[in-house]
Length: 157
Image 1 (spheres, rainbow, N blue to C red):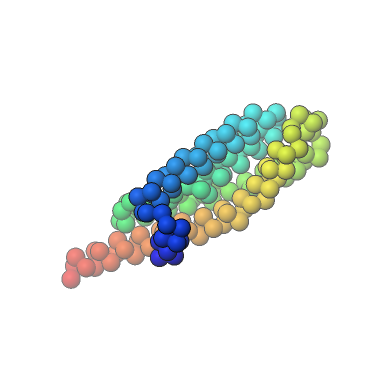
Image 2: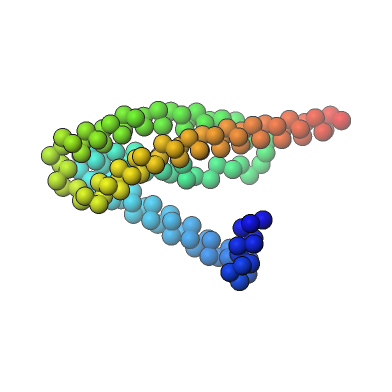
């Protein structure tokens, strides 16, 4: 509701707003791709951390809402939850690997300071974002299971 009010407040009709939103999503995807290219091109451990970080960001920014609310969608969400847990179980070790590389690696001189700062910030931010995604996935799984069960109960009645 508030989103619709915001759209109307700036005087943009819904069709134009949808086009703007679609184009913005394309720009975001292109930026993430360039970020991935920059991060994975880094030398040694920095490139490994960059690859992990980009995979993690792809997970936390992914759209996990299923098209249908049935048991099959619940199973898919459950698998996403397990994959999420397995991937982010490495967060602390990746953060430590990055900190150690910054402190001790001779390759740190080959990495632009701005990029190191950017990666450090993103590594700090990804933990809370992964927590939010984990809760969202669990919520969606329960919602889908409840809806599927309600549909079955409705059919029985």
